[in-house]
Every structure is written in structure tokens, then in C-alpha cells.
Amino acid sequence: MADTPTTRSGELFFPAADGSFFEWYSADSGGDSVDLICSELSRLAYAPLPRIETELRRIGYDLLEPLESRRLFSARAAADGFLCRDPRSGTLFAVFRGTETGNLDDLLANLLVDPIEWRPGTIVQRGYGRTFDELRGPLEPWLLEPPGRAIVTGHSLGGALATLCAFDFPEAELVTFGAPRVGTATLGLQPRQPVRRYVHCCDLVPRVPPARFTEADIEDLADGLLDNLGSPAGWLAAASQAALRQSVRLAAGTAARIAATRGWDHSFVHHGPLFYLDRRGSILVDPSDESVAADQRQARSDYREDLGITVSEMNAAALLEALASLSAALVRGETDSARSARERLFAELSRSDAIGRVVVRDLADHAAIHYVRVLLQAEYGSGD
Image (cartoon, rainbow, N blue to C red):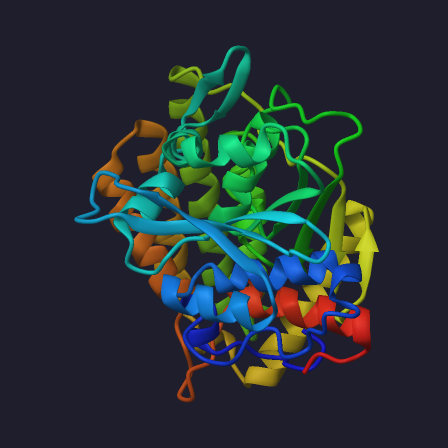
């Protein structure tokens, strides 16, 4: 987030609502900036289809067809992504849209985290597997035997779907932005298949769901969120935060025991090398866990300072109560309770200050525009 230290709520929840696309693009150099193009296409996927077509035409790309599904809560077919091609290079892009604000089908895809056998011997999360299977049909004619370079990409939920797409169509490259964990190591991509997984600093989504539904992993997730509160000032605040952490440990233990009784002993992993976008806007390939954790701690501190937010202004109790409720509901398979807890959690995480800035860095860093800005800075030395 080199040039924009804070995130507006609109940038997070409505990635395509304002601003322009591809202002930096030129036909002469665009073909050399594939990952930057993927980041902008992934943000464009949130736009209505007419705008997608307009923006693609403006840079000389052909819109081949939208990816649409008619799922449980959809009154009509909703665009879940699109296929496009650069006629100059012949590169084909399959672009998957991330979670759309207010879309209950997307919400359900994110909540159904129970492991299933999606393909023979391949374990993935139910929501992602089911959603991708609804979109697979139109992809096969283009990706089964692509005539040239083919890339599948997406942000957030779109990155999860792109990962499953890359498994089914191993001729395609995979480029994701802020993608969650999708499946176990059984979701094996081809050894020579190019994969690039971008994570922006404190972005929460790549850390969910936890690698395993164990007490330690659930606690680690909660500790990252608590780090946004900073160090408490005074004995009363310190005691309060200690009590909150103890509550989280008790909830994590309960959730872990329920998961064990349901047989959830699978270990979810990320696929491909990590391209970590640090707090200064540098791109680090497969940095150590320790260096990432240190960078995230400093980033959260910088963000609080930029916002002028104090610990007392953040409702930690409500945040952790929602997190504990969500964990318990997920492992019990209580979809309605999980949806309610998820909404409470995100309401706390995404609270804005008086001028509309998201107050929790772990959610602020998930905004699709930040991936574009950092890659643009790396390519051209500018985040504008």
C-alpha cells in the first residue's frame, strides 16, 4: 500500500464502483505485464458485464463469453467471471469474480468449508468445489487444449475458483490475488505448471479458513486479528484484553473438539509459491514466516497511527465473540448460524471511521485495488 496508507470502504466492498481501469496500459508493453494485467482483470470482474465489455474493447481485448451460473439464491443468471483474449499475443484469460457484496450464493460458497472428495482422491472445500462445477462447462472448449498461452486468474473467492480451474485444466497458468485456502495437498497442480500466488501484507482472506480446525490454528487466526488492537494502555485494558484472549482459547478448544468428532482431520494448504507484497510495496518471493509476521505487526501499527484509531475505539469483545460463534457454527455445519456470525464479524472488521476508511488493516489489505497498485509500482515505478 505504498501510495495509499488507508483503505476506503468502497474500495473494499465495491471494487469496480468508481475509478478507471487500465489507464496505464499500452499495447506495446502490455503483453510483458501479464500479472499486472491479471490483477486489473480480476478487479474488472466485479463490474457489470456491459462495463467489462467496454473496458476490454478499449484496450483491444476480445470478450469471448461471460461465465454465468444460476445457483440457489439467484433469481437470474449472475456473471461470475468472463473469458477474454488478447488478439495480438493470442493469450487467453479465464477471469473469476471474487465475493460480491450482498450475493448470498457467494456467501454460501465461502461458508461451506467442510472437506469433500471433489475429484477422485482430491479433497477440497465443499462451497468452492460446488461453485466451480457450476461454471466449468463453458471453460472446456477454451481450456482443454488451448491453442496458445492460457491463464486463469481471480481475486479472493475468484482466486479459489481459479485454483480449481487450474487443476482441471493443467495447460493453463494460475495467478491469484488474496485467495483463501481451497483444498488439501491432494489438489496437486502439475509440477511444471506456472503458479503465482499474490498476498498483500495483512490480507485476512489467505489465512482463512485455518489450515486445520485445531485449537492452535484457530487461536493463531484470532491472534492476528487481536494484533490490530495494539498494546493496551493501563492495567484495566490489559486485563480486559487478556480475558478476551482466554475466551478465544476456550472457543477455539470447543470448535476443535467438534471438528474432531466430525472427522475434519484434513490439512488445507496453499498451492504455488507465495509472492508477498510487503508494507513498503516490495514483492518478496517465498519469504520466511517470521519475516512476514514481523512485517504484518509493523503494518498494523502503522495503519493504526495513520488512522488515529485507539484501542478503546475498537470493539474487540464484539469482534471476538463473532469469530468464536462463526468457528463453532462452521464446524457444527449450522449454515444459518454461520451466516449470521459471519455478518457480525465482518460488520466489526469493516467498520469505517468518520471519512469512510476501514479500521482493521487485515480486512483493508484485501481490497483488490491494492494488488493493482503494488504490481503497477513494481512494473512502472508508480502506484497511480
